[in-house]
Amino acid sequence: MIWAVRTWFNTTFASLRIRNYRLFFIAQVVSTNGTWMQRVGQFWLVLHLTGSGVDLGLTAAFQTIPILLFGTWGGLVADRSDKRILLIGTQAASGLLGLVLGLLTLTDKVELWMVYALAACLGAVNVLDNPARQSFVGEMVGPEYVSNAVGLNSAVFTSSRVLGPAVAGAVIALVGTGWCFLYNGLSFFAVVAGLLMMRPKELQQGLPIVRGPGQIMEGLRYTWSRPELRYPVLLMMVLGTFAFNWNIVLPLMARYAFHSGAATYGALLSMLGVGAFVGALFAAGRSRPSHRLLVHSALILGVLMAAAAVAPSALLEMAVLVPVGTAMVTCQTTGNSILQLNSAREFRGRVMSLYVTAFLGTTAIGAPAVGWISQQFGGRAGLALGAGATLAVALAILPTLGRRKPQGASGREREVAPTSIL
Image 1 (cartoon, helix red, strand yellow):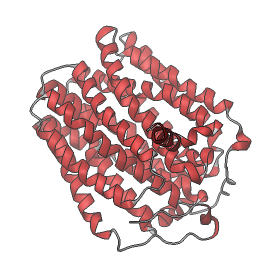
Image 2 (cartoon, one colour):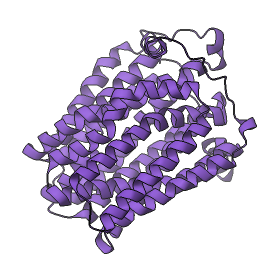
Image 3 (cartoon, helix red, strand yellow):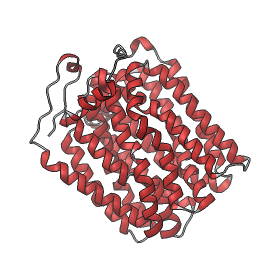
Image 4 (cartoon, one colour):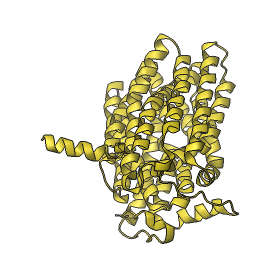
């Protein structure tokens, strides 16, 4: 029994043996709790200011429109840059934006347009931050530990779903929303400190690509021509548009379906986070992700979201959201790992920018639509829409399993072996 536990621990946390990644991991533990506190606080602040589901959707849209419009350009910048230096700048900028929102809220000066403006500024920073941060994982740990490190990153982020929303709900109730934003702003500087403490010589960096014409289209063609890259991006595009709108549907469910307040909203997000944490550890323990796991987890997610849409009470909703979170993060993390393992180093920033655009940028389209539907017909309708879209895209991709094989890597692509499309 002890031997089995030790083996599981060594496998699940293998990438923490690497010093640079260990610094990054510790910093993320501090920062991601602040990220979730700000998410909860921001959407609860908008709901307090206007009471409108459409305004919740617009807030999400303003934060993701820059990613939708310029995400692929951000990936190209990441491929051309020293990602560690780029991340120091983007993390510092994100921290300053959180501090500004916190001070505006605490001084009672905040207005809806200010929330929109700061959300858009954060989205602009994320155009560069997201692809750099996603592709930087491979530089810290190398191809052998990419899947494990992606899983551990998700475990950190999703464990924060448990603690962050719960703390945010208590902080909002006791001292006000502004303190959530202040903590988040300060927490980014833990990441900056971790990046500064890294040993650059131990990073597995390739040479930045030389500036040239047509490099964005080159990245698009590269991704679309390979089914092992194309299908995860398409799946995440649909899920990002219609399914992953929890910050819109859950506050509406808390207030109008269950006639409760910020504490219930935080608890709903926390239960989603409990399941997500389990899913992240499951993904971290798998040595090789597969397209079959990706599609099957999406099918399970669709079924569970349908169950969440009809849950009659807050307690039953929380119970259903636990396995929803597990399926959601298993799908998300598996897709991320597949893309990193199957993309050549010189294209990885652009490939991951497409993943980020599909996963986050599409919120600019889906969030206002889901917000309007939830406003008109209730949060249950928003959940049902996400369930139907998830099932539809997973069933569409399902017949391709086993029919296609990934293209063999050649040239510089041989640095990572392609994962099986089975």
